[in-house]
Length: 203
Image (cartoon, rainbow, N blue to C red; front, side, top):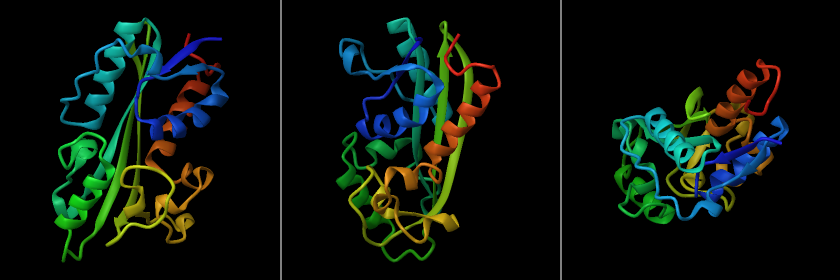
């Protein structure tokens, strides 16, 4: 079975990606066994640039096929912020509570709360980029968080899709969130492209 490195240390992303990718016949692993590898530099101007940089970095360091994700939240009233800085919006990488608090503070009194999550995926095989896909989910930002599921900005984000029924991502089960989310959309595109090869696993 071909091994695929899912290049993220974000446990929330791993939890979402692994079940979605499992049907493709890969042996999946994350970055935990590769703690000696320096972190990839994420200084791109777009999610796609960061995903590509991460995938190439970890492919070179490990010799494995690599799938990298870069994703985040774009808020229209903030001119697309936090965008590629979503994970470190409040200054400390991965501090969801601080990020959410800062977002609410910046939207205090703002009526336009439209936003979207975006996800870019990049697959590298044999040291070369072989596939790049993306997904997006439109929604609105709540004035206060709801729900205990998910991670990051999920308690503040309500998808506009009818299937969401007004629930935030953090109020949904993983099965409910997957077909609506930006990451679910990106993985669906990835699966479709790989299936067209006639095999799911990297060659």
